[in-house]
Image (spheres, rainbow, N blue to C red):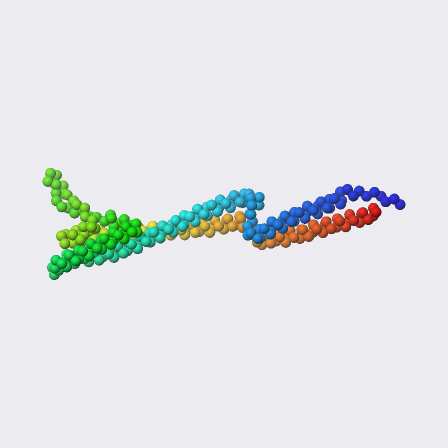
Length: 268
């Protein structure tokens, strides 16, 4: 009995092989992608993984870096303010010492000229030390300490004539004009205290801004991580799924080979 012709190029066998090979290639790509994501910890490793997600992620990273830079700048500013506050605290203590010297000079009934000169000399050294400290740490608040003292009237107009007194005039004023010396000390204390209050307000404002920025950083980092980082539970599941599909594809190919071999045996 003649064997009926068998069409080996028919749709059954080629479609099985083609489907099996396509499924195997697809599962290999899935497995490679899942393995890469699990290894790197990133869902997006290149632009082709998620073009829109990559753009959004890079935008968030840019914002995160910008906020980090601003936060660091505020931190440096607070450190500079803390240094200036320390200088001013020391200056305020020195002003307190000068105040005591002014009071002592004003009550000079029992003091000798040499004792008064020693007090004046000590005051000059304190003032020089204050100026040097202010210049060293970049604080110019002491240079703005001054008062006006009337020294007469204009003969033509009768308007009062004033002179400006600064901290450098204090040693001489302690002997010649204790009242003006006291007024200059009061002005110095007021100027220093006011600047310290301003520094405190700036520091609190900076700290408040830093806290707000830290909260922004957390939220932005969380959003960026959601877009870019690997979901390990999902990728582990995808890896297992790809492995199973790969094994199934290999089984399909094996079945196809067996059927093709059986048909060839019949033909022969």
